[in-house]
Length: 432
Image (cartoon, rainbow, N blue to C red; front, side):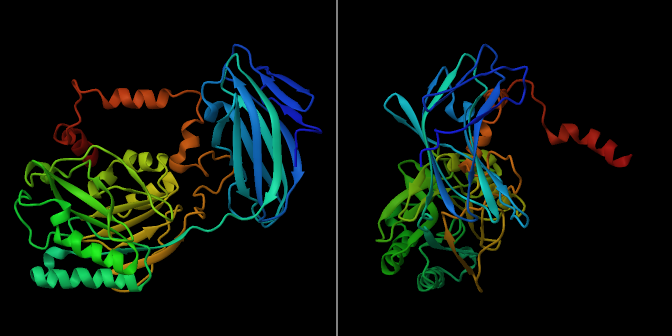
């Protein structure tokens, strides 16, 4: 139903920062002056049903607005009775597209348990000399979105401890057969899963098409119609990479990721070259990204993949810090699946909870990419329903934070961060 008609109540939290509100001919208009630290919105209260799905659809023009995500507010605030669950009481629109000279925004949301009302808030903030005009707004109950289920398999397996090539291939085939018989849609193998004989360097590596591990996995991917991610050593010309090959359900190569942040021995002793791209891959059940082992110590890798749309991030590795992995899932509102040489294979949901099940080396879990529970159960958090916390990045008045981060990263002169230089100070603190 069209909700622009009828009563809308203007709100300006700080009366000293004046906005102009005009409601005429079914159009909502908000105009700001020279001050950019402004915040104001129209609000309408509507009845809503507990655990029902709703769609808010708006059409507006925005003159003088440089950043739609920062300055245009389209919110649903739920009003709940007693016994409410922990889900956030606010949901913020972040899906916008151009439509002629106007902008169309859309938000599908589910009313939390015991919801009685929805307060629709349409507003303007943090923009000087700007005007926003809402020319259409519709609110309707809709069917729940179709599930996007996929069964994910992870493992703990160290091929270097096998008894040679024949035993290695037997173990590899056992893992892939186990994943296939378990009905996995995707199986992730650990980092260096082709290294059954450890070498001083990897200069003898060949291309993916000649890699026995990739070729073996390709056959099982085709047999069980499952994706298999195979992290191996790949030669390309004079360079050797730590590469995760993605095999499609028909066994063909669907894509690859080359590790960008090498563990120090990989470069200085093992002859590897770092990659320099951060791709995401659209599979038939959703979008995935990959970060390999030491990549995960850099929080921005996971954030970038999530901002690019990754809903499930895979992390093959040799070992990992069990405190960091769930934090990455929580920060970026993604599922995160881990296969390891030394540690257990694990799968985390967006709340940082372990959800994998199984006995032996393989853990599996069926996930639904349309069910990424927000990690922060408090009202007002703008990153609850945004991949990579995209909306949270726009919750400040400017991009100063990210500009200063880049400036600090690019500094190189006279920066003393050596642990050895600081140990005297640390020893003094410990001895007090």
